[in-house]
Figure 1 (cartoon, helix red, strand yellow):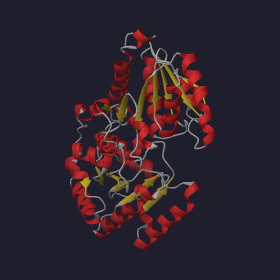
Figure 2 (figure 1 turned 90 degrees about the horizontal axis):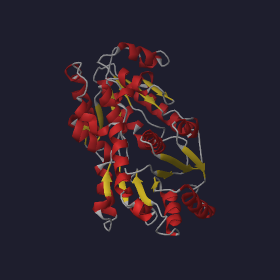
Figure 3 (figure 1 turned 135 degrees about the vertical axis):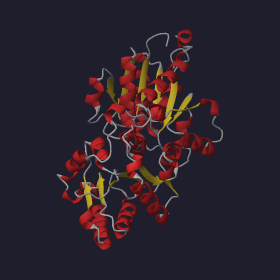
Figure 4 (figure 1 turned 180 degrees about the horizontal axis):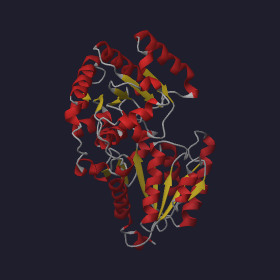
Length: 385
């Protein structure tokens, strides 16, 4: 970039989630590259982490689904003019609408360039179409790019940029199988995870969309085969979803596998959870835009088994075809699990995943590709200012 830029990212709040994480990661990259990073949101528990990176936060409730939110258009426009914003990057639909309206009221000489990121496979609608109006539209996977072009055919493909989400390889180091220390660490607070049999891991929040029932059915079939398999579902136990947890517990009891299942709150040590496991499951019933779990698990050196649709299917077909299963085919899921578990010793002959295999999915690659998009749009800024 020819000069330091001011990049303003827009999103509803900074509480938790993939969108929020990406926002912080790009803010950090901007600051380290000598630019100014500003985030506009209603705030949240991640604001402190954002500020610690050297970025700035402006509290403005641009994501609340209310007609009153239209009242934030003028304050946002004034903010963009006052701070000399060069790029506005919207990461969610309502903030994108607010940002777009704010930009429409600005003169050409001071109007920032507009970027959007399509983080999810939202239901096609005029409301969702705002995410295709960026001068550059970042798609977090090829699956998202195809989705955008299929449902919004007027979108110019030349404006689309595929930038996969990335992980920090150092945060998910390779762990040779069988990691007995990690397994013991998992079993200490959750005794049901003990034993020498295979441990299946399904991380994900407590919602039916994550496929917990499919994981329970798979475990029952594996145990019927004579395997002392266990299942850990960190994140499924949510105080706000008591009925759902009770439903899962009842289902496990009906299947006769209650003593082999641990339904727990999220774990802060997810890399260690991968290391403790023998097989990681990604069974989302609804296609996802990306599949960060797949990248994380493979980085640690654990095979992944999942439904071959959406971003998860895309990653599995590229990185581990043997783990891609026709969606909702329970027999194929069982066969795939047996194949991967039976091949574990060969699969884990202590060789970390080749660096080039996951290079496209590194945090650094994601940050560099995003900053390159800002660079594209910034080329003519000096002429406009």
